[in-house]
Image 1: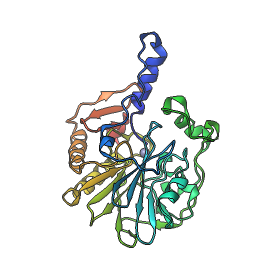
Image 2: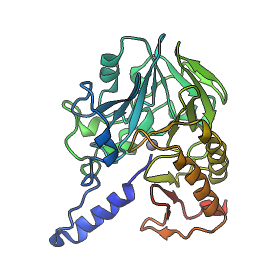
Image 3: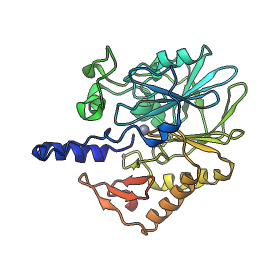
Amino acid sequence: MRTDLLAVLSASIILFCCAQQKSESRWCDDLPREAYQKLQKTAFSNDWFEVYEVQDSIYAIYEPFQWQEMISYLIIGEDFALLFDSGNGIGDIKSVVTKITELPIRVLNSHSHYDHVGGNADFDFIYGMDTDFTRGRMKGLPHERVAEEVSDAALCKGLPVGVKAEDHHIRPYDITQLMKDGDTINLGNRILEIISIPGHTPDAIALLDRESGLLWTGDSYYAGPIWLFAPETDWNAYKNSVERVSALVPLLKYLLPAHNTPLEDPAHLTALANAVNRVDRGESKPTRRNDENLIFEFGHFSLLLGPQVLEK
Ligand SMILES: [Zn+2]
């Protein structure tokens, strides 16, 4: 989970209370993001997903019309392809990835929040971290828990053809193979290393392609407000995890985050580590939002913490 939801909430409040003032700004008014101007949209795109080949045999599958602006990645190897996250489960991601490759497809989630596991049920091989949080999320979520994700406020245009808002829920799925920190996935010509980075959730991971200098960061880093206020978020664990992955920066060419923009400069990870330390030492002054969460602004990204998080 992520992003500009608070901006959305503020915008809805403005819309609700001050409609006559024509403050009808919406979360998607500023889209497309500048980063996409440099990227070529592929013919695999459809009415819900925009698909970009961001590196050789690596596709970013972006959901620009829903406020999570989720990005799943298809990483194609010689023997099989890995789908890193499966999106919100609103559009049919399987029909997209099976057009891109005929190879078998395995799924790995950056963590088990609903916006990352929505398409899992459509695949028959899923890697999962060996944590209670991961196992707990396998049962899916009922409509009530994700209804807001298909509300008018969440959507920049209509739902995909044939999809009804009232039917949306997160379908249950099974984990095929349990994984742990340091395990590798060999696609044939590309080796991916799992780095356990608990914090955002207990099962958060980064995925490292050491040879190509690529690091998928999930929701532990992206350009935007990073959500660190959920009950399952652990600030101290997040702090340690950010420090751990920021040590990889000298090896890296790009970060590939799970929301908003698909290719980011690794220097942002160093900036994140500095920002987290400043917040932790009480050196950064937050703004308190309407919902009591605290936002610490650092320009390219911000940290959105629950009011109690630093007291834990
Ligand atoms: Zn997310």
